[in-house]
Length: 249
Image (cartoon, rainbow, N blue to C red; front, top):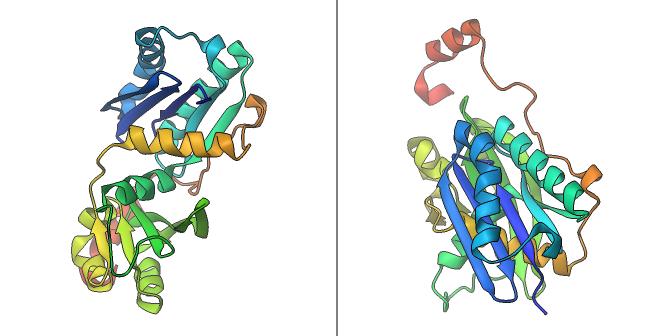
């Protein structure tokens, strides 16, 4: 039987929700950012109401654990915990960068050959602001996704060096657009997917996969994945940054 799962993600500027039930899948996306903290709970409750569901009927509540926007990660985690505590349900922490990769994978033609895209390395590269990138690499096989390089915060030179040493085969994420001029030379040989088709649908797929692998945890143990302690540059740092020529950053 299909599990009943509610999944929430506010790690980016898009607020994504998915409700998986035996009757089917319901998806919702809208602008997130600062509005997500006020909109997430009402949107989740509306999604349940539209499906004729209650929190008590869920098997688990999933959330985008990060990496991503600091406030967004706290919002999704806190809401998932609160709803799960109230309903006595476990939670599922979903890798937010894997959401990007899974969406890009779903956008590829069903017959991608040669070479097949299963078994190859798929990178996620997401703009982290301050001239940095959240990035990770994954590989897919018959059992699903596995981690090749865990999510990390890269400076642009560090990511460019990593890709120069091991040219990526697939890259997904908005860093391809945000830093197009500097990433283009090392991304030239890769299949690039800068835009997401449906964050909510990818979130739903990964939540269900995590549930079937038995990865549900107690709500008290849910934590966001923070990769950056510092969320803004000082005035002096911004001035120094602007003084560095573009090509040397």
